[in-house]
Amino acid sequence: MKKSSPLEVPQMQLDPNAFVAHPDLLRALGGRSTPVPCGTDGVLFRQDEPSVGVFILHAGTVTVSMMSHDGHSLFAVQARPGSILGLPGAISNQPYTLSAFARAGAKVSFVSNSDLTALMHSDPALSLKMLEVLAAEVRSARKAII
Image 1 (cartoon, rainbow, N blue to C red):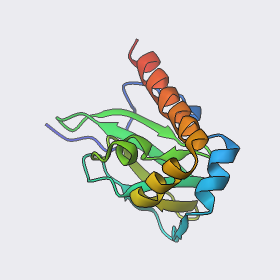
Image 2: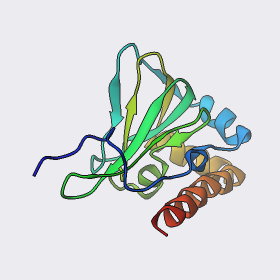
Image 3: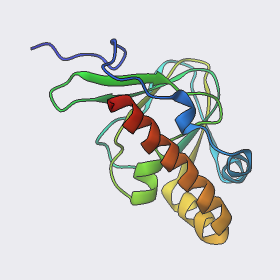
């Protein structure tokens, strides 16, 4: 059986706004972030890889996708600017549950797991903003499977 690509027609549709964070959280993360060069198309992270941190989309195109264990696309969605990608894995110190693919010219930055944890400890109000993003992801996933 042929395995599908993360860019094939997905089985479910997620709300691309589910990954978008509050501006206060984006500002705080921006102070701890480093730019990610996106001069060519490339993978930011892959599903099932160990989480190393979160990626913030500022501009351009990043496709977020999930594949089934037998290699078929479950969904693919274009993230919106202001999206925090990889947050569930970073917070739980577990592998990424999605993949993220950046198109050439995307403006992306990276915050390591350790910097994310330090931010959560230093400003508990921002932890609540992160929970809002996680809750939006869960809601979107649940709506997609109904």
